[in-house]
Length: 284
Image (tube, rainbow, N blue to C red; front, side, top):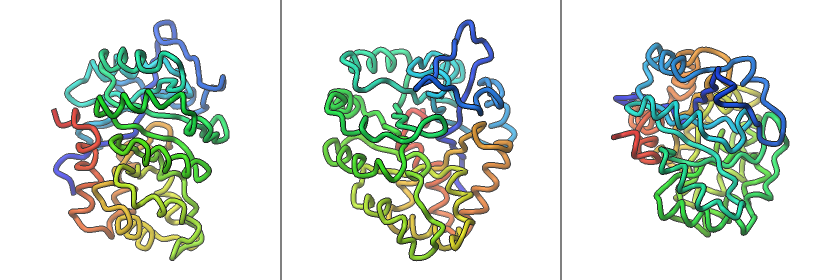
């Protein structure tokens, strides 16, 4: 197990709607952000209880849209343990200036939310040439981009990775592959077809942990296949806390159980070392 465990996908929600007013992307707020809100102090407490050393906190687009104020303020208040991953409209004419402004305030990474709990996936954003200047800036600044999409968006992800090879890309939830067919996991071929692109990394979250025990899938056959294709140094664990049910400790424990068939070295990468590669500021 990694000497320190790092989580690259928790969320925080403020309890002060006057200072941080909700303005969800696509006009619909996620249920989880209302039912299971989590202020940063609660996250720190949960991390302490679970034994999680540091975290890259992902901005809640389904609560705040493109206003990264809370995630930046929250992480700056705990800069010894947290960094902020925010969202910007990369297609906007002022995207480059906006990204620079947020990074000056402390933003350490970006995420594109093309759909999920409040909207069907729309990969058109990923093929919009208006976003290219923003991607070029990410390469200049050395920032990682997370992409929330499903299999429908993987061709566009490939095109971005080929056009901007110096920008590390993380696929949230592994791009949500279909795995219930079991070995050799032919239904997940579109995911494995991305393995030749070294900039593409995968985020292992509760969604794939749950899917790995559905249908004909098993953790012992699925996760070693992913490691063989991509390498453990391109895989990182994310809790999705508090979006996913359970305590942070329970979510971590489930991940450790599902990945127990992997070598200790592989698990060190997944639970910590890959995160430090993707977000060097976590090692500061």
